[in-house]
Image (tube, rainbow, N blue to C red; front, side, top):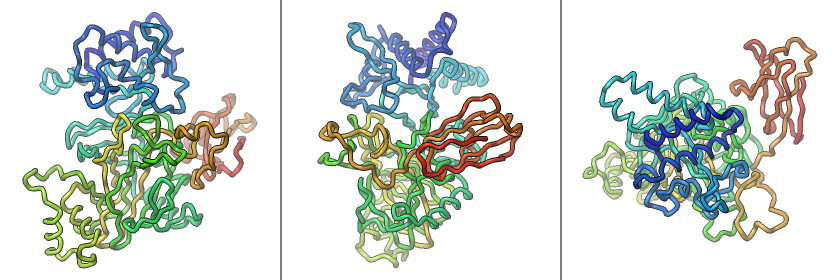
Length: 527
């Protein structure tokens, strides 16, 4: 929820005062978030109801800010850092409230006093540069700082089609600035500009074609939580790239764009690579997984304590022209540029399709034909090489967003390659911290992890100090992810990584040594 400028100003003053009387450097981000939550709660005292915070849709999203931050024991998923949260004592001193965490409008997590002051300072400078214009007056009314309840994840909050979000904190291989543009408010769909490039897509496709393992190679796509059911209305081929170097770079970029300040492998699936040959498609479906009977060990009920897919980032790797098919259609959405009175009914779109002659490859009356009609009348995104799109499958309170129903339109000409990353609001099944349904919690031995879950490996990198070449060495994941300095006299660097990952040593701007992670669960590398 966006906080008014008056509240943010109070936070700023409190941070300044705190810095004068304490040592903020001794506070970690959890201390800071607790302090900030308390400061905001105090600023609400005595004020009238503020429509800028809270929502009438759910009791937990109340006007009481502390109640907003702590949704209660039945609606707060337990994330990996839950034990590090610093509760705020309530008036009766017998109970406490969990704190919110805070993000800029663009998703950057605010985790220190200096960051908070910098956000407010930049807003003031921006207004000052703009003079006395209406734009300045409007922007000064609100600083876009978003509070997110404990156990929940940040989500972009679109206001109108065409709204943009600049993401300077997200680094792409091209070096070009990354930004989001709102394509639709309902469903929430965004285009991500300059997110990945043609070279990266070529590398991902090449690796997918060369993959030979049964669990990861390209084959007929499946559906469902168990990922082993062939569905007649999903006719694409797919495979998974769980730990290729390019896939890992893209996955880390995705997590950064979505507001994570720390990469968590368990919050993602492998990068799913998709191939749609001529006429191949996938009927409209939800990425959110259902388990209404609660027979699975994993708890998928994200509205309460469970975890599910909340965001999908689509990466297109082929150029398809208008009329070639292959779009991603959001079956409950409408094109933003089509007036309400001009929206087409499906039966009218089917009639126009048949008259156009574009459906000769499809059987009349088939689900594929109906999909093409939907793709030409509903909200649809056409594939272009290196195009990226984000959409949400979940509301901020964990409830499934049924407007995210989407499908892969039949390809009418050529071939379509794409990839997608599903991101979860909690660790997914098979990873540490994944939520478990109540009837399984007391069982002594959990079932074996799914076969497509990579094994996490603990790696340590040590500079022996013996070779002068490495006096000022730096450690990188692959060639783009700076990890830390590892020169003479500097402590060992550790990392949780996976088999096949490549770690590189850079000296004076050049990579001079590479380590490739093997199968052992603990590995140590020396320079």
